[in-house]
Image 1 (cartoon, rainbow, N blue to C red):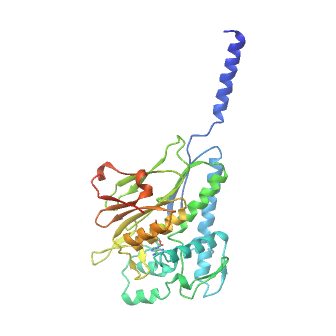
Image 2: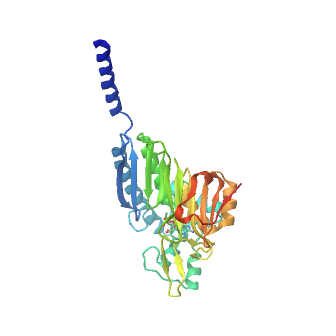
Image 3: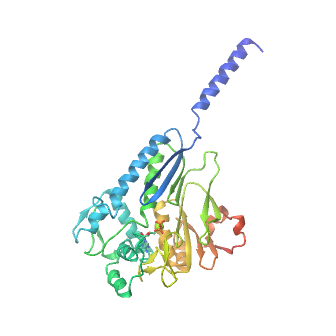
Length: 342
Ligand code: ADP
Ligand code: MG
């Protein structure tokens, strides 16, 4: 081997090493913070990750300032204290309201953002739990009706006494908005955990799929694992927030707008998997209210989501699109599972 060849080889090695430095950044960059009443943790990979994550935190705080029902400067506060007046809203709030109404329509009111006063009455917004009387519930249900919301795409008016909140959709839409910011910054691999709402961008940096655990509604473990990429996995469960009444019954925070009481549809957990966080979030709450049969019908009428539901007798039903990506964890291998086909 001539000296010339050797020096060319050395140059090659140096060149390769320096190339490697600019290769994709496989180190995780993380940002965790408390917002929207929950703990959020976002892990992103890529050279702009830190800048992107700072933008994300700022955006979430901006959205919280728009959507909080308790901050007097928020748009939701203004809407809820408008005495029937018209209120102009930001594009983000407009999207949230527009989408909530759309999902209310397709779920026949199982999702209803005007359920908020009923939630408050049960104490779910403060932790000061109580079982409301039938009279009080029927009084409050008079103002629970998304069809009475007037929204023209830019401004909204609601009847006096009605109050709305973003509880069932806000975090999912926040995930979509965060995803957009990360993607704009060139991030092609990220895991968003917004208080248990999972959203992913691309695959893991080693090019394998993200493994997402599904919490068991009956104990502390994860009953199953989903291997997914580029999508959201969002669960609504009765076990997330509940209290036990003096009558010994369990009352949870997902209410049936038809009765004003905790939804008793036979389901204890609903996970929705799809591209859009806002759809998964809204549907996880709505399907919990609707029960298995109606959820199945809705799934058959669309092709933008998959689901895994657990019934109160411990059975698991999953839709065919997620079958290959779903596996029961060892400890739960005996659970009854059934795949729903189109
Ligand atoms: P979480 O946000 O607690 O993870 P969900 O996504 O299931 O869980 O949303 C539940 C929240 O949605 C409740 O805390 C409440 O604010 C609101 N909510 C409960 N029932 C309904 C309903 N039928 N329609 C709209 N919002 C609801
Ligand atoms: Mg939800």
